[in-house]
Image (cartoon, rainbow, N blue to C red):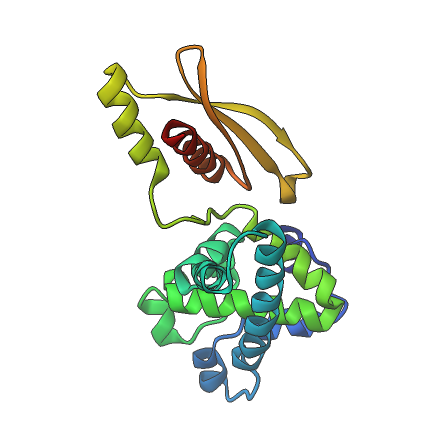
Length: 221
């Protein structure tokens, strides 16, 4: 069981008791009369997650101001996002829960999953250091989409193009570069053979929004 979760997480624990603590909910510890559960590791993991995420956003979005970066970070470290990460890593089946939580669907509860995700990050940090924890966080971040602009550029561009030409624009993936955990996508938006704009992003959705934004700027010019 431990081997499978370590393989999924991508970290082999030198101190396996840290992983066990990270996966132990306070309800289980209370029932068993144990002092150790994952809340302290959750506190630690939250700080490590915030630091890595902030660094990532600072590097990837050099033109964004502090206010927008803060909003982006808040979205990336939110409970729904962390619960989604925990589900992808299949943390639920490995959790130690009290009988009450077990019978009421605790293994799929977003609050329990998100807390466990932070606790696992904290455990990896204590076991392998900042880079080891950062590796998992960056891997998870690579699968997330962050809307840099609040405006939906794709919808606006489609509205304009459809009005002028009676059909929507097409988005083409031009290239993908970088390792699996840090890919950059390049997308071209065009109408027929006419190129309207190009954009880059950490995933296709982000690149399409950037291409639409570029196209809108050209159309305004």
